[in-house]
Length: 411
Image (cartoon, rainbow, N blue to C red):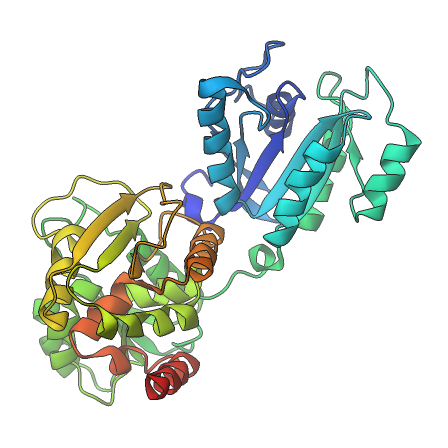
């Protein structure tokens, strides 16, 4: 269970003012002393994360945050870190003391409503004070049936767990497919996995592992080859594979080696659909044709790693885009959960496949880009477009391909 990737977990954020008992509630939910508990306000600084199994939802990630009423210069930085968590939360727990829910908590609740994120209201410290009827009535009118707890006495925690399970978004009870809807049971998927300088020693990268596992769970067959052996492997088959999936960096060679009658796409494009919005990314890719010298391009990857050799984000994508556009572009790099507040200065945002983060964070970034009027796409789509194989890479996704054709006609 602990090895379930964080990006595939239900992210549950715990928010509220300082010293309302957020950390104590996290410790009770996980039955471990994860967060430091103190009567001193502002004990929690950076967000504290704890992974656990919460059946029937499955693997979840609790995120304890600093009080969003923190003060001073340091408090402002803590608050900024807390608000950064808003972008990747699938379910929000807002904690207040009894009879203390007022305009402050309401403002936080309304922001989550705008983001379409489910909210659970928790009234803590019931061992010290009972909630007022007016407070309960008002919360219920807002669609919030609060959970009354005492973290100190460990009461109401089981009810809170039940509420979390009931409030979990449907996609976590019925997760979307990576590739199993494209390769029926009994059919073969051929996966092209280059082993180069940036391949992790002794293992495959996460999207490859997850794709293999889903195909096996679907009773599909899987064949894994390197790009140099692909043509020979195809020649040994009695019937063609239902789908070939390649690492985007090998797109050009793989496209040349795979016959046109066999569907082809990349891991990055599969994850654009799984973790983001493939249709929105497809439309954003068309902005590549509008890039000109001096334009700024933001490249985002959800993980942080030591870049070596021909790094895809820092070397290959800039090189391919420069070759395609003939323009001298200004590339800027962000990694991890960092993301610029002001996007207006960019002409394009290019995101990674997001295997190391969750869908909520990617959708939040897409929404921010849309609000700023900046097109957004992802690595695999950018590479396919720059190399002239975009339509072929979209062949397995008829709706996305139709959106591309319609958008191109409007240009």
